[in-house]
Length: 479
Image 1 (cartoon, one colour):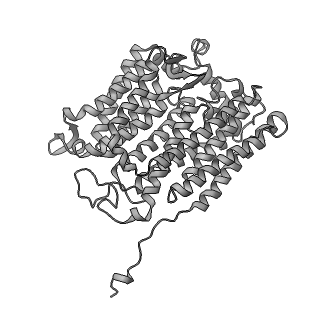
Image 2 (tube, helix red, strand yellow; image 1 turned 90 degrees about the horizontal axis):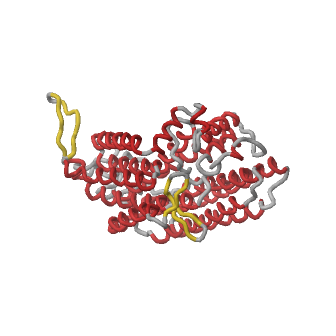
Image 3 (cartoon, rainbow, N blue to C red; image 1 turned 120 degrees about the vertical axis):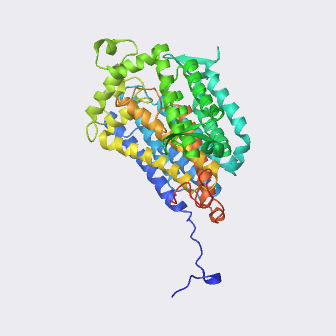
């Protein structure tokens, strides 16, 4: 009988390859996709390649190359798919924004601004990558990140600082520019929750009262003093809804907290209690706030003539549905269409614009790339051996995926519209820069997890152990 190899004859443990050259090829392909869509948009609108085609392609390609070089030196072991996926989505967004405004005769000002935000976003990504060398060290700043996140959330509520647009106070303004602080607050709150839940997960998972029917355990009820984190998160979501009238951000923040709580504890009871609290808060919001009732009415009866013609009514949603129908399978191109004159077609309804211009095939390709990017975030959580890294990566991946669901569900009338932006695609600097910062965090987390030095088995080598279990049992299955 053969015996296992030991000592010098034992096989070396496999380590991941760097695959930076593969990343470079895919990044160049992403720049090529950007150039192709931009040239097609110019040909369909003006019958010629855009005047700024060479400038846009060189600038965007230079930014992508700079990001790749930074990753090659700062995070050589990171996932090779994260940067190309983010680059191609960003490029599609810039090209579609150019085509929308060119067909409307507005000029290239908005696409110029989006290219500027792209440069700032990639710079922020590199800055995060350079500044965060040991992700676990962020746990020591969890209460500082909590305070910073709450301050950013409350800034738009301050008189003279916040700006109200269409009934919502999401922005602050200075020097002719507006910033949406909640986009950056979400990153800080995810870092806080990862540190807090990683520290308290045993208490939250094990300290519970069990409700039984005979000998069968049907529900685990957390102790009242352990309900504090969820109650605080619920209160912050309601405060955000009351103070800023921002339904989408409050929904996403509470959902991210609930998802991270489940990942940390694996307790279905927390999810049930959280959903009950959400339904209670939503019922109160519907009764108290007129804009919530208006959103529900637009979702429920968009084709009602009174709802359609009302100020801030359902015209935007209905025309968006017609635009998606017009797009068909392959799209109608950028030369004509409804979205060129539709409000927020380059921001809240950017997926509608993609569906009209590029068709169902193009829209599904974009959605699949967004979901694949979220999957890489979850894969980063799977391969991470640190509890804090797992929670940070899984929380931010849920944030990106759930945000896509909220936007796509809103424009297709699956759920009420919330006015949220689509990651990397929508016009605007706050969303784009903050999403690139999340990419920088993912690149660092992935590099830390995939390095050969971190591949040495330790007490948590198979994954984060379930709270209260022996370390040998994996919390996540091995990828």
